Image 1 (spheres, one colour):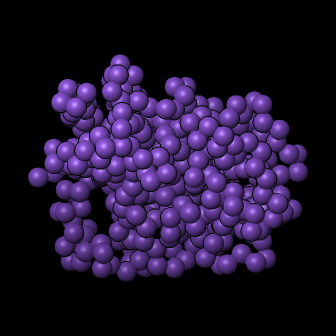
Image 2 (image 1 turned 90 degrees about the vertical axis):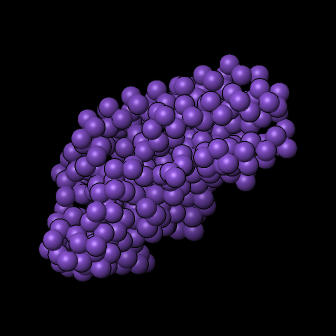
Image 3 (image 1 turned 45 degrees about the horizontal axis):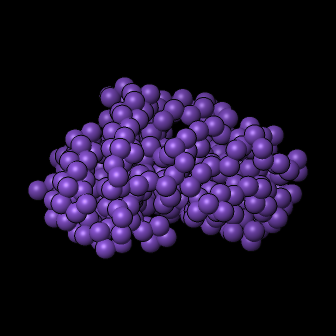
Length: 357
């Protein structure tokens, strides 16, 4: 029996995508081989990469002046790739709004003067600093943000307008809402939350920014090398890229990012409205900064939190345990989570409150 999987990542994939992959698992595109077996140099797989890039360009309206890469590793690997490709004068600004934003900043400090120009750690990352009040440095090679905070459940409503290239880790919200790619120098995202199985990371980079990686940059982290070779410089994560393309196809069929964004806002609205009208559950994030993808909440006690996680799992609502830094519960309601899944969670929450209040 299929359950509703609220994991923050790896997360649930659309059922129709899994069914399509199941059909092709033994014989991909008439090759007589699985996509897991086919050479990445085979024309059949090259076509997958090319279509995946074309579909992502359509979904995000990515201009030709940007390259689209499918690289190995998670987004955390890009914490090093960013300064190694962009930190030419050894200086960069970081906004720290959560655990992963902080890790990116700490990694940046290995390679140069990575400066934390704003942070919401003072209130346990329950808000996003006012971007209009941040004193950015004129000598920064780039400004780095994490657009959605998976652990603490916040997101940027407006992005900083800065002179330096804006670099955004969008791992937990890519393709969930419309963004103007041209406002960014680089966007990167681990795919295991909203796109595909773990193993592939999407990098969208302005071409003029990737021409001159730092001398010490390893070849595998050079975006230009990957761009010059169409993401096929070495053996790529073939199966995750294949699944990503199926997800892109589905999203285009549904009407694109604009349409899925409406569904996401509706789903999140249902859950937040229930929490806000409950005297049993609470969400500590400042309302204007609440994430649409990741919704943390708690009951009146840790004991009840543990009971909630156990009983919800038995009811077919899995992976609701909150991150160890926060505790409580967290519902990750990415693109693949249907409205019915959120409704089932709310129904369980009502029942649990009635039985335990």
